[in-house]
Every structure is written in C-alpha cells, then in structure tokens.
Length: 260
Image 1: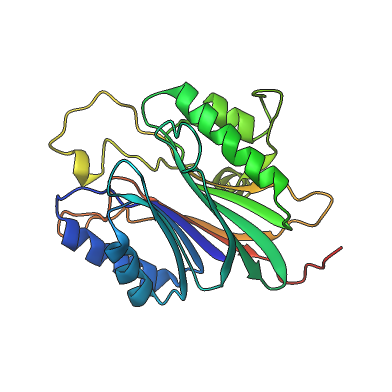
Image 2: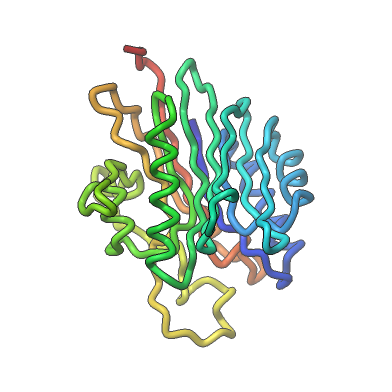
C-alpha cells in the first residue's frame, strides 16, 4: 500500500501551476491512499481525484473557514469520522477513515495540528488517539502535518516516550525506521532554506520534519514490510514547487501476512 501525506499550502501564489505539479507527482507515484491538508475546496479534491485515478474521497470543510482536510483512496472508505463536533477544535483538524486492504481493516488518520500552541496540539491529539483506540482495526496509521518537531511532547507521546493525561501511544515513525535501516539521513519536510516559497520571506524559523506517517505497533500481529520512503515535490520546476511543505510517501507491503 502506497500512502502519501501532503500539506498543499492553501495560498494564491502560483496556485494553478502548483496544483499542476502536484497532479503530475500523484500520477507518477501511483498512490493508493492520499491524505491532504490545507485543501482549498472540494473542487481541488475532485480535480486531484479525477486526474490521479482515485475512486473514493472523504472531504470536510472547517467550520470557521473555507479550507479543510481530505483523504483520497483507491479503496472504499467506511467508518468516517472527524473531530469537528468537539467543543473546541484548538485549530486542529482530523479525519479518520477505514479501508479494507487485502482483507485487513486499516484505519487512516489525516492530521493537521495548530501551528501556534503546543497545548492546542496536545489537546486535539488526545481526542484523536482516544477515537483510534476505541475503533476496531487490524492496523492504525496517523499521517499529516503535526506542526511539531520530533523533539516535541506530542511526538514523544505518540511514539511511547512520554505520557499525556494518563495515556501514551505506541506508534512507529516510518521515515525514521526506514532511514535507520538504510543508513540514510532524515530530511526536513518544512524547508525554510531551500523551498522557493520562502525565498522572499525572511524567517528565523529552523527547518524541521513536521510531516509524519506513523504506524501503530501491531505487535503481537506481524508488521508489514516497509518497502520505500521518500519525500515528494522537493525539486523546483521553473522555480516552483507544489507546496511550502514536501510530501511524504511510504510503501507498505502487507503481502504474506495472515489474520489471527
């Protein structure tokens, strides 16, 4: 299963050209499940869905603005959930959908957390984690723009190195795992130095790896094989990249795995 997360930057600057570049990447990579953040409107969802050959989509607009989140899939999605009905969203959105992939029920979470305040990110993530834990599935995946560095409390929480509100996660950072076994350096996904979006925008921010794909440790069930990991949209075309973020792609092989 080839899974990608991409914050596609809802901004007017070179928007049509950037969406053209994004379409080209999606077609080339033949992605099975795509989770998107900063989706301008449903028209963008339908455009990408048609061009890249996705059969299903789950789109939800935020209540306080036009943009929203979307999950696009080649496989039917059920058990659709969002956190819009929470009393306070903390400027943090989440969609969750279940897909049947090769006989396995896989929960996919699309995350976009608040860029300003850590306590907002933490509060929202607790709600998402609670929903995932209460849902029946063979595998659980969280993907998106977490707006946090890997040194953050939410990363430590999700990967089981810290607790919040008496709970903790046990997710595996697939990029980190892949790069360790391949002896590769981890790359940033929000690149203030090299991404053309920032060339005319002075900033003191430090580039970081804010976009993650995390697989909940399935033990004692077997783990899928991590075939590939790569960043998408790094190379400018005529001075433009699809977004101010880079996309993250992983390829998971569930072949040969058996149900309990």
